[in-house]
Image (cartoon, rainbow, N blue to C red; front, side, top):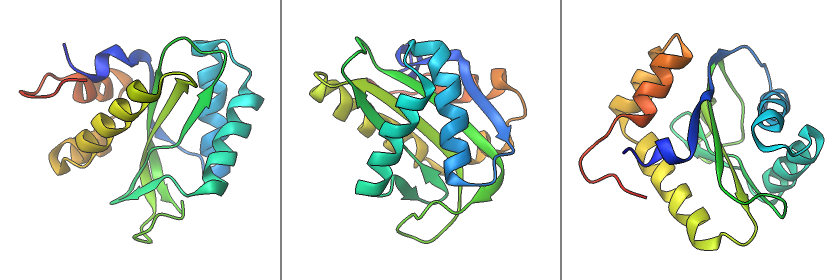
Length: 155
């Protein structure tokens, strides 16, 4: 089993979103996350924006991993999106972002949160994988790319 298949459901991937700003993409993903988690979209968006104000989650190379911690959650949820056009995200390398992978974790899940962040970061830094994601046109294609088993990938 792929490490991401335990976090990412097939209905939590969104290829080629047309949002034009960081706030818009975070609002869109928060709305999608509401359905998956049962948390209110406004609360999710608020926590994500607080985290962005504390330090940008743009990792560089066109990738952002916005994340937030929530008392009400009992497991980690992930959502993945590619953007139709790259957006300014405030990444350290100054490059716009076109891959966004959001993690929502329970407050008490410190070790699991760090493992999930490390796994996602490592996978998305794989240039072949990130290029394949950028080319994916359907949620099924995107999900398959993200959850394909690779030797040595374990959460």
